[in-house]
Length: 334
Image (cartoon, rainbow, N blue to C red):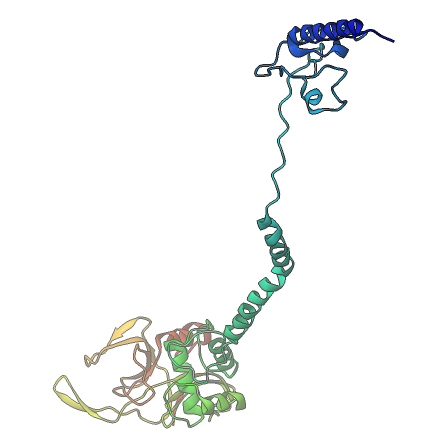
């Protein structure tokens, strides 16, 4: 049995050991001092003050808060400083709420765009202009394929037209007048239903001669025909004497074109001035007295001359240069 003195001596030794332990730098525990592998001492932690009533190692329960608070000695092996890993942002409630909407928009985006485009397509189809219908009436100033078709048909029927260009100008007007005269239609140079019908029916004037090259002048219909062996080669709009009385060099004359059968006896291949001072005549071909077939810039669809036969300048060029009306050519006025 241990004596009381021995017990006191042991308690004093324990108190002395505890005091020494508390005085050690870094507040190392007894287990650390007696470890087999001594670790390098660490510098005292700032702000850590040992409690004066800290129990000894034998009285401290394992896993106590005081033991857990002791610093861990640093690793003697130096390592490169590491940057703190960026912490992932905490998920917020807003993306979670918007995600379904965004996904829904993404899934429904194409249909929505299609729905928006569909009315535009329908509107485009509704506003598309249908092909322009063929005009019901053609007149001076018209142009396009319908005019070209008209010109081609006129040429096919023998009405004089110097060019097929799709433009309804003065030359086309002359040819339409000639067609209307041949068909007994109103002479307005407007291609309407009746004139179209005349084109479709192939209306042509009939000649009165049957042999040779003959220039025929139809006073009733105000037409000039170039006839070869009883066949009409070309038909021209023409204007003859208006039957009125006029004054020239102090004398009175009547503007009439005599009927009968004649022959060309004189011609002037230039712009000839009338000896009666009645104006200029383009490349005239005289067939009786001072009456001639000549070119003029004014050829209305009715009688308007002083007695001569007016045709267009281009028609007179054709008579001279293409068909030929030499002296001696027969001229029939009826």
